[in-house]
Length: 297
Image (cartoon, rainbow, N blue to C red; front, side, top):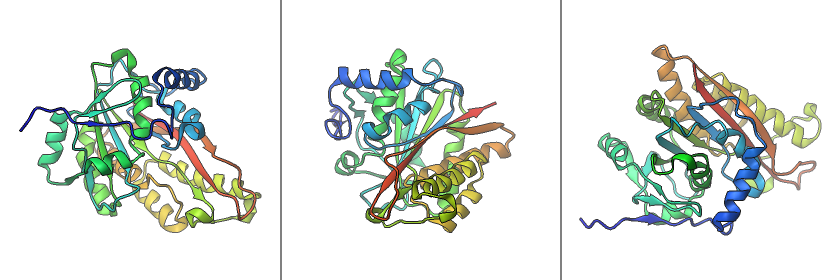
């Protein structure tokens, strides 16, 4: 084996967010400066992964809850948008680049995860095509900048897991979630509404379409806040809400569930909700974003 360090380039820089370090830094600083830290230190956050012009200000509400003084390992769970995956996959590189600074993958934790036999390896191509993890890297770098040489990341690409697999992975990650020096970042947008997403649920009693979407999303968000994986699965089966990170969220809820059985006391709160645009007719489309934080009491 050679000791060549393998890097994943910031493949969406220059399109989904600026490739200029100073400019990116200023943007992130601007969004973070407008937000309160009320749920600090977060043990896990849920935040969106769209282009920063759409969701940068929403994501700030979650990242403001991260405490860089205690956080040393950051697990980033993102859904797979391009490759069919029935399990979870780990990266094949050592370093994830961002326009701010490089982030180092924790090979020791990766080793522990490989040993379980539950993971597959994603190719560099899959890794660089996927945006669900990458969109969290600049924010992670920014939130952690005061301790930038003292933390590692553990990126995990989450496939279309069955409920029993969500439970298995939840159980596996629960021991890491129990450690106060670990942070879990769960990458998800909420409702993708409109013809291009082939989803057009509309409850007319809510008024305009965008109000119906908000009502649907907030129903799901309040179920997530109840920390009940079964209710969340049932909600998805009933409404088919196009929450792209539903499997990473399912894994997190199952991990929490496992720790609650062992007497750990936790609460989750959503701190912000936004839509890319307000849908008023069938030709419109929008994506919703939500940011929230898990606290351990």
